[in-house]
Image (cartoon, rainbow over all chains, first blue to last red; front, side, top):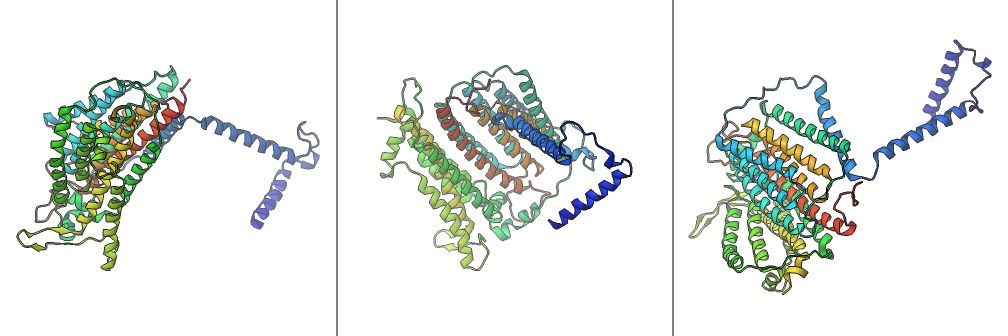
Length: 428
Length: 112
């Protein structure tokens, strides 16, 4: 404070003598009418002006419209992305956009995906159609993962796609079937179009700039150590449950929290009734096939969980497989039928979340007991009589936790939306 | 081939942001889904996608010369699941907001 005052006084003295050299300040007697008390009036005028300008700026930005905030956000993101490239750009030039040889199948899949994406935008007001088109785009993404050597990603994408479509279909029942037409605001539409195109073009350029340069990756470490340190030959799964296990623990926690929040949001909620066309609620053929599918799906799910460390699979994928089979049962029989057969616990999967998180965290804590840092994993090949050497990694217990959280979370989410239909469809 | 990937990421981003800016709950959810495809593919592309190079080790020394980069794959795998949970959460919020305000516009009132 004392320093600030010193600067102010010194500045004032300098200003006084500086101006005095050009004008005789003591001779100025006629001032503009609004300046009655000298410098104080000037200061107040500046301050009021500043406050008014700030208020006007805030009012123009903060309109209470999320739509407007979002467009500002996108605009800022695009600007922030472009800014570093204005000062000279990247050191090495980008490779020219050339069509290198692509297999005809790849071109077809990419074409279908692109068409579906654009068609989603064109048809977005008809929601059911738009949902189907998004699903098509998702499948194209899934096939891209297959083609580019990522079997784990392809499996995950495919399964998540199924669950998402069912979830959105269930929710669509309580939302308007069509988006209301937009008011004609040509300027706003043009701004949105420009923003979307700028973002798309920017990301595409960035992607190409990235792809046309050599990669500097730390992954040689993961590839070299997945077997000796992690004891698994599926490098992706070893990274998920072992090398980056802490990350995964955080992610399943987020997943569990999202499920619980969704349950809380919809638990006491009664949607306004919509007229639902009468029809066969639970078709017999679906019931019979769902009952046939469930045991096999459970078998495959456990198989995927067990082999995940060495081959494509793992907790996330296996959990989704079981969740989809359970979901099929729910759709075929209705929640009441299921609840009656689940030992009076009433179709409640929240416990799975707790157990899953606990098991995952416990594997982490267990390594403390052995004097290692949190989530250190170990593995062994114990010899079982009659079975032989069995690969057993402590990361498998962690993966079991992930598995339980994924099954539980997915089911909690689906049932919290499916519950809304109880008054209409599930009543028996 | 990589040009097609680039094109796909750009198109998904543009369409996703356009749908988000429509500001209807359902359109925004579809937009976010498309945008998450784009972001996942982008992160995946950072590992320089390769054909026939699954990172499944089979003894011997494995390096990035012979195999796809497993790290972006691991990151994207969990991102897919997280994106799903966010979609689900947004659906729940959309249902409540639609019932509470009678409009599925994100501003809870029909635009003028």
